Image (cartoon, rainbow, N blue to C red; front, side, top):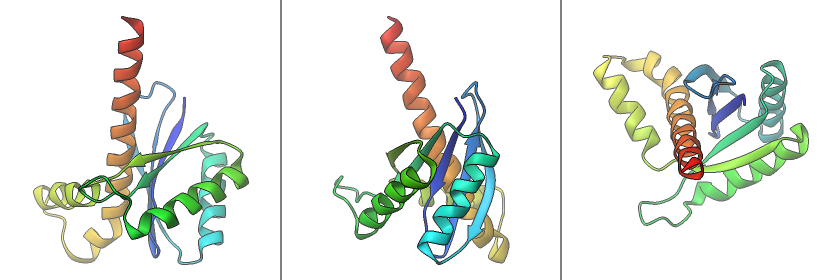
Length: 144
């Protein structure tokens, strides 16, 4: 199944995708858009263009597992995407993905404006990778 991962942000939103094999999450890019509905439409258009069958939206939880202030906005964004696209939209725990993304960018020596431009896309890729790993593990458990 083709799945798109989304790291929602009020100014920048990262997007990643995997192919039908669900083997690898790949970054697509970052959308710079502050208008909630315009952003949702751009993501819906991207999903259609890439033939995505499912969307995974990062859900920002605190380290104790409780929803952050941003979590409600992410849920509303996911609902709007569901309405626009008519696809299955899954919320996925995105704890530490941005921190991990910064770590990856530190290792690859990406700094300054270039980092700001890609950190959300890297976070979206990590969100999607986490979800794909969960799907693989669940499929393996169901096969046993």
